[in-house]
Image 1: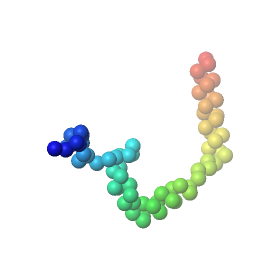
Image 2: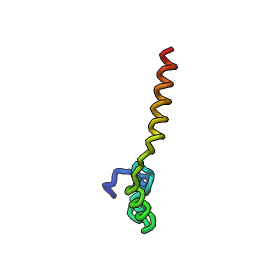
Image 3: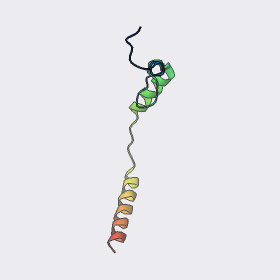
Length: 68
């Protein structure tokens, strides 16, 4: 007789992380996936000045319309 208290079906379930990958999938990342992650982590976004000016003008216009 076994001391195991969990049901049989529970022990057969795969353990997943919050992103939905099983632990085995996470450990088996391919070289291509690792390179992609490194590239994505190195990217930086710097909007053009004209883009920022347009965003702030739009925000100011929306505020003025709401105040009316």
